[in-house]
Amino acid sequence: MKRLLTTAFTLLLFTTGAMAQDNLLGKIEFPNSGAESAQADFIEGVKFLHNFEYADAARAFRRAQDEDPEFAMAYWGEAMTHNHPIWMRQDRNAAMEILNQLGETVEDRQAKAPTQREKDYLMAIETLYGNTPEAEGKSKNERDLLYNKAMEELHQTYPEDHEATAFYGLSILGTAHDGRDFGIYMRAAAELFEVWNDNNEHPGAAHYLIHSFDDPVHAPLGLPMAKAYSEIAPAAAHAQHMTSHIFLALGMWDDVIEANIVARDVQTSRQQELGEETTVCGHYPWWLQYGYLQDGNVEEAEQVLQACSERIAGTPTMGEKWHYAVMRGHQIVDTENWSGADSWTADMDPQNRPAVNYYYVSALASARMGRVDEAQNHLEMLIDTPESPERNIRIKQVESLILVKNGDMEKGLEVLNEAVVAESELPVDFGPPTIVKPSYELLGDVLSELSRYEEAIDAYEKQLERTPDRRRSLIGKESISGMASK
Image 1 (cartoon, rainbow, N blue to C red):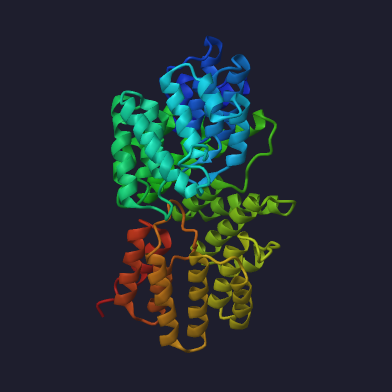
Image 2 (image 1 turned 180 degrees about the horizontal axis):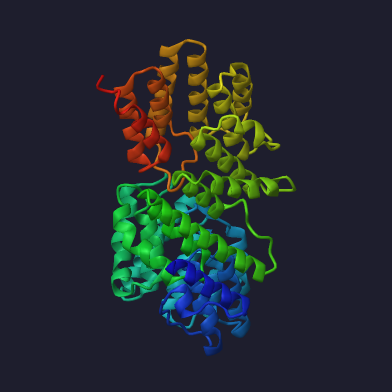
């Protein structure tokens, strides 16, 4: 209820045209040499940056530039909006267009920064975008590592500067190029705690610590930040959603649902204020639907999926198609309504990423219904989709089910165990499983059907270690718990 009241207050502010300030995006201090008239917009931009509301951050930094065209740090801020470390995305060309507005060369831009500290911030971003001798011509991953080194030096030079420390912590997270790495994430957390302990209303400290602890093993450490973050930045939809990363990792389904309702509503309010199309097939609806399914609220989950289905009947973006495919998968798999694959349909190009989950779930559903020829046809479509380790795991799952349905039990189990091993070697997903039928859970289902109950329980328990309190694994385990010792 408290979070819902906060949202109502936020929506009221948006509709009256008042933009977020200290008590709606968090509290930071960032001394700089920009004009006084540009300070509010600049600080707002940095806060939006910490909250990963990149479009709003860019708008704020441009307003600061309008107030003070020579404000070097306002250009630094807007250029920073084109680097998304956690998502491993970067648009160097867009960032360079902004930096070139400040000056055509590194030397020109350095001359525009009045203080050494601001020159150092600018030089770090020059490294990030490959403009320094050591970074020139390097790949993004190589530049990420060099930028992390530059931010470490900035942090060491200005140890009392919370912004330098927060962005340094984020730069550490941005070096996890091979997925979640506990060593990297704990190193980031150690630095970020310095800011959190001094200012537990700092949006970056709360946000980046949640990312650092975003797995079932470390999630309890992130619970204080998750409980605080929604109140720190009620005007940031991403902040409202981010709390659910910790809640999901701990199986706190009511909190996952509430957080993503709020995130969706804040996002919708902002999009309406800006005259943009509202998001119905996106990140927050996806997590909301998954939360409903894990809480047993099948009808509510279906309503979220239905809204997405109606959207993609028009001219959807690739992102909307991807979200529809994964949400369709959860609805079918987590309810075991296998015939739903015949109802929830869409046109999918096998050459595009959304097709992977789509044809995988269609094949899975057909196999579970005993329609082996149909499953084989869907499998062939799946094989034509873009390759990835996750796609290959899905292929093995379907192949194993077809083998089992055709009576080759041992070979089917052998292939399924190959899928289990491959998936167990992947980093844990931070969020709902993108392989919507996790391999350990599928192994438990198949072993249960073969009356190999003790092995099935072991498989379900291993899945629950990776996805705590996942409903379908709990149901599978409980349904055979009395049979294992017989």
